[in-house]
Amino acid sequence: MVDIGDMSVQEKYASNSICFGCGPSNLNGLRIRSFRSEEGLIMEFDTSPEHQAFPGMVNGGIIGTLLDCHGNWAAAIAIMDRDGLDEPPCTVTASYTVNLRRPTPSDSKLIIKAKTVDESKWDDRIKIEMTLEADGILCAEGKGLFVAVKEGHPAFHRWS
Image (cartoon, rainbow, N blue to C red):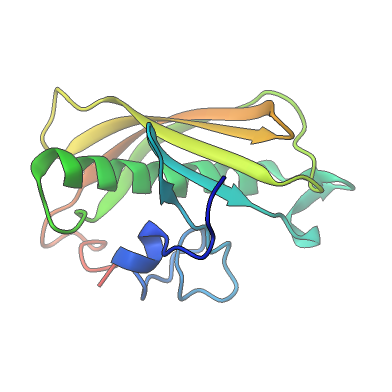
């Protein structure tokens, strides 16, 4: 599905990021790797034993982080494409919700997808929907509002 030999959007545009969820430079973080797909972004994730809530099941906070960071990157890439930019703007999460549909097994490869659902109302923000599947079964889904920040915001240079 995803060619992990390719460079992820995080590695391409924010190689120095220290974000716990998506920062390539955070050796203790999740270091997610998101790739373009036909509908937005897609990623695969293999959990580790420390990501468990109880034996064999992924912690809900880890699931939330995966959806949040992947959704944030989907928003940044969507704004970049929409506005014809060479690089994505730095985006942050304004709000997001996560619905845990069923326990997520920790011994399965997780497939997380994110797509734009509304970009028409604002220049600096975008709504994204995210899904998380294990073995082809929907385990979690979420929605988020992500905002491109401007100079002066504490996160503005976080991807530099």
